[in-house]
Image 1 (cartoon, rainbow, N blue to C red):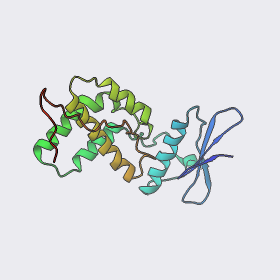
Image 2 (cartoon, rainbow, N blue to C red):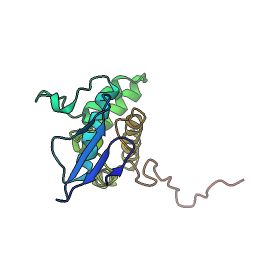
Image 3 (cartoon, one colour):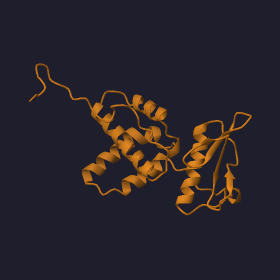
Image 4 (cartoon, helix red, strand yellow):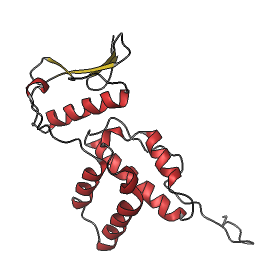
Length: 181
């Protein structure tokens, strides 16, 4: 029996490989043309199929040729996300710099649906701790972009779960006491 998900099903076959399937708008079951070794790959395939259905661009997978739409990467999505925002020029410039220097070099070419909490934690730790404010801003921006993708149902869950990482610790100067009432 397959594991029931929000959209589609992933079944473990006797071989140990995973088979992804869903019921299409034609009310028929459709299977991926291949099986998968990793659950994230099966989930990515299902997310892509759901995206096609929601945009009205779906055709049965069996009838599609090799001209399938390329997978949606974080770079593609973040570029459109930034273009769609009504931002002040300095904010847009700040976001652009964070994307270009902190986020996209490492995560940009990954499929949006393949960005997992493990991938985010690895990216986060790879940023180093020399610039804590910039690091916190980059994490916060990534989390915001992924929240939008979640709201648009392009991903199944929010992968940004690095606890307390969207904030920079306030430092106190020697001899300075926190304000109390």
